[in-house]
Image 1 (cartoon, helix red, strand yellow):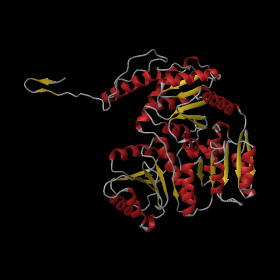
Image 2 (cartoon, one colour):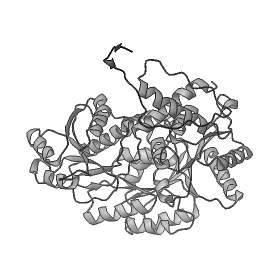
Image 3 (cartoon, rainbow, N blue to C red):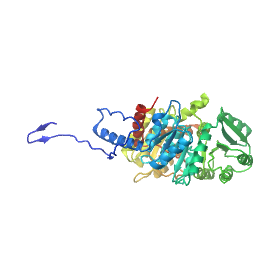
Image 4 (cartoon, rainbow, N blue to C red):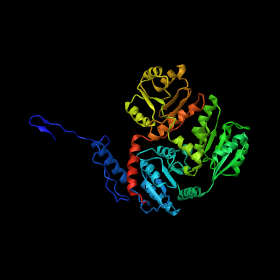
Length: 495
């Protein structure tokens, strides 16, 4: 440290931004995490050391089978915040013939799902680091993990939300009897061992049914087709299905009424449904559809590609088992590529940190990035740069908020059809033109994927509609947690 007499000295002191007290060490189930490189800056070292210490302590709370896994074995991944309940689930897994892995943290669970490829995941929604809905969204957004059946175990009463996002079921805490959990594990085992998935399709046009069957069908998929809503209800009474696809136009009843009837049938609450429409919907239809997609296990799709994508999600089809053309289609949907390249995006946010974060996410996709911090500057930029393709709009801004800014944009004739992607925490919007709503925090893959979907749908049809899309995606802290856990697993997993 340089110092001079009567002048003092100059030095730098690094302090962590977020202090996490280290917990007492416990008996380790895994090897120590690799040492961090000496070249990492001081604050990063302190922050990562503290986080790794907490992750290691959390992971050691419950013994699992990671050290006894054999090559090719697919365990149950138990993501559970309560150590006592996690131990109980491990015992039940053993009783039902499964080996078990345990994680109390969402970031670690995502990394473990990628690395170990479990056959089943049980997911607690209340986790200490990441909201469980975000974990579920991330698992179902990634090609490598989206086919893994996820059973939600939670105190929250959002059963339909979990099914819409791709879970196979939801179990409410507190669980009253052991028999309930035994039945759950038995059902999950039957699900993964069943060689065939069954889908019901209801469409009044026989030619359309044939095309849909060819898109969705394949090895291990049994497709049952009907041409009326009444026939669909009869089939559901007599047979069991893993997924239902129905056209928005039915010959004998309204599709919305059909959905209402299905959700009242005992035993069909967990049946995921996909409503497929290829025409522009009226405002009344849009509002009715929005209500159903928020209150039932119903997804809304408007293109053949999205139909294939959602059906593969609900049928839990591993990507490697799909036909080459279908596999390529899904990979294109989930990995932003040519659609984003050379597109111009305007990021609107009053927090410069968010602008920097989104720029770092989108620049690798060869997008041209522009930014604005106020609603007024957005209008000025658009008038001077009319070739912008999409706007990523923050709603909560001072003076002129996102809603007012969009109204002003729509008053400019040449921007009435401009795609707008909003960042907000509540999903309540109508009448603002072509809009897709996103969650407040955007993670790397999901942000690019969702922007791609917005631009992709804009390129397919010249129509104005309101799309309400629920996006559960990771913050930068989650990304860092996953990265650390991946490094730790890579040094401990038995190959």
